Length: 449
Image (cartoon, rainbow, N blue to C red; front, side, top):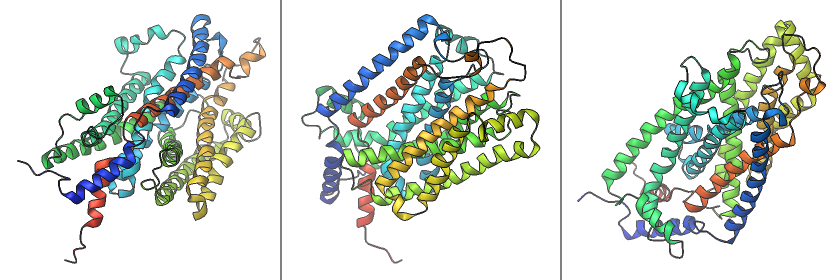
């Protein structure tokens, strides 16, 4: 018989205590039903707007011949970016060996799954003929970055799903006998998905090897997913997109938006799920330092992205930069740079600002700024095409999102919230067995040798 874990009375008491703390939120209660009812109602209303778009065509949006990519593509880039937080926390920081990421790694993977899953649907909302989507797979050309994008997004979603599920199998085995009062389907699901896990050391050894392989595989996949997304812009000669640094520029921005989304989620679970014991003030302090680091890197690429063309000041670049710095988009541009990047970094240098509530407020500004940043990347470069604009209505020249576009965009955000809600309400958001292992390590006597 293989050696098993958590078989001593002391270890069992730790498991019981941790499981009780975390599983108390795994239930379908009144608040869950009301929240899901609210989200579902808003989703249905927003999907009605998409039905109108499907029936009438993309003419109901603000997109025209000149600005053919609008809010939908900005939203797609934002969703792909935010999904990279799973790789940043679980793979990069996890493989380095930072133990403080253990309580938040599963939350990061839930965010990655939700945003990566909905990113594909956002692209469909931008298609005038979504019935032709299968053609991408049937007749896709290897030379097309669009095919690359579909491939890496799908691969990243699958890897994120596996990285969320594999470490949770021991928790399902621990939890299936502790679900008194829960629906029968949930108990049955735990029993099936635990795959008869018996906490043998060989099981843990195989699982950790599999997880390590996934953690390594997801790093190049995550870099590819946003690099390829950046190439959708960078391979064109359009001013504002014609850049050789769009790949690292997009990836560094992804880490910023993903980290901000994670901080917001951690605060929500800490307060509403009463998990202060596991999502501590120290956790917020450390994740704030990560946000500062990735924001500084992102600021560096922002500086490069504008300083180099500003120094050469070719005709197209001069027009584009003038619109951003002092023209039509200047208020939005400077609000993003100051409110969504520079000021948050300065504030986070102070320890008092790295506490949970200030972190929540700062992260909300950073996340909103991250979305608007994608809008600034997508829309303004299309406002000044190389060919002259003649004899067209003014609404063809100046892009303004319509109510239909806003509603469909809100629908995608609602879908993300629904996925996060379901995964976090039906399954443990904190890894039980890893927390128990950490408690056992703390209780071991210090070996001076």
